[in-house]
Amino acid sequence: MPETLMRPLQDLPEGFARRMVDWQRQHGRQGLPWQNTQDPYRVWLSEIMLQQTQVTTVLDYFPRFLTRFPDVSALAAAPQDDVLALWSGLGYYSRARNLHKCAQEVMGRFGGAFPRLAEDLQTLPGIGRSTAAAIAAFCFQERAAILDGNVKRVLTRVLGYGDDLAVLKNERALWALAQALLPEKPVDMPRYTQALMDLGATVCLPRKAQCEACPVSGLCQAKAQGEPLAYPVKTRKLKRSSATLWLLWAVNAQGQVWLQKRPDKGIWAGLFSLPVFDSEDELLAAWAQGQSAHYMASWKHVLTHRDLYLHPVRMTGSATHAPVCEGQWVDADTWPNMGLPAPIRTLLMA
Image 1 (cartoon, rainbow, N blue to C red):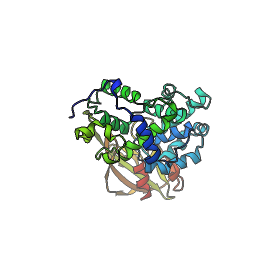
Image 2 (cartoon, one colour):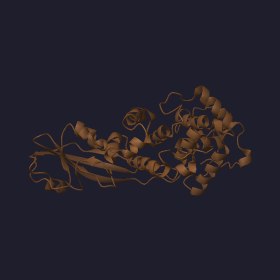
Image 3 (cartoon, helix red, strand yellow):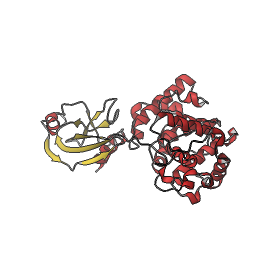
């Protein structure tokens, strides 16, 4: 573990913000569809989509979402099922549910206009401190610091900040340092904020620090120590769990599939799915009239905190004898447009 270098606020690296702004102008990402706009709806949408999701994936979803929901009022007025359907495949579906709730609160509490201050943006569903700061900085030039995973890595390396970020007081201290590093001129905030995102995403990487391409390598304590990959320090590991799920893939003579809507909490909350059971016996009992049970290859689906071991069983039967579990028969040309978990969609399309 690197030795912590606690810098007093008056001893921060001189010229850090200016170097970042200049670098972004010449070498940063310029052509992403959510850049070069001060529309808070588009910035907010991109920020939520980019949480835990690669840029290349979001590039496919972002324009489709805007086509269907061009503004916050259209999103707020849409049924949640429509929002989840369009989100299907992006994962972390609580983001989509909060996105919908947030749009409704923007309409109801703020008259359809996103608030301009980060502290007000934070009161909306699904908007944390860093996301609120990003919206406020990009759209309203507020001097508000972001601190997502990429930015934590950049700043801890530059500052040589080796305190354990699993400890709340240490993360709070890093927030204070991030705020102190902001450019003095509000007009620089959009490009500075983008610079931090770009540097963390393209240069100052988790397993490879490309110091030769970094605009602040001369200020970087981690580089000076020869230990850039030792930062950031976070000792607390996520506890993983696992679950075994049996999936009933019931198909009737008309080619319809039996789908049920998942509860509002738990795995795949609010999405449509094949019926899920804890055991093979429960699955078989749910459709005693089902025939030709075909046990398909099982596989492991990895979530952030949990591994799901999925065991699909495909059965056929008549529409007059439906499974004895919640759900409905859905036509083959209907389910592709519904909100389905990624592994269920993959299975049905196979």
